Image (cartoon, rainbow, N blue to C red; front, top):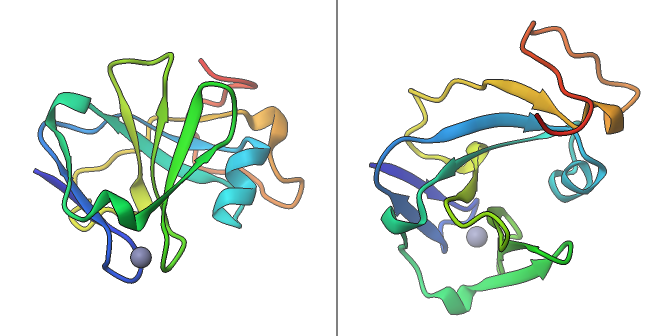
Length: 131
Ligand SMILES: [Zn+2]
């Protein structure tokens, strides 16, 4: 069981099954949302996902026509993202996982938007956009 929670602990979730499609995303949107060089996220199946908090404690930000991001309305942690055009996945911010020992990042995407001050040195596959 995958479990995650925000910085203040007010919002959390659990998900059955394995995390898949784990990646570092360097797109400008994720850099700004995470206030960092990149954001790391992975997907779970929506059928096994459940919130462990009142959904009223979440703020939804629609970052594009099909993508919505969900934040804790107290501490601002980015918890999950959904893409209405991708039915088989809910994307979790890997940095918020509470039991992340099995997570292995598979690749970098949107390296064409990478921060100029950050150098990728881990040898993982890199994609200019998404694979
Ligand atoms: Zn919080």
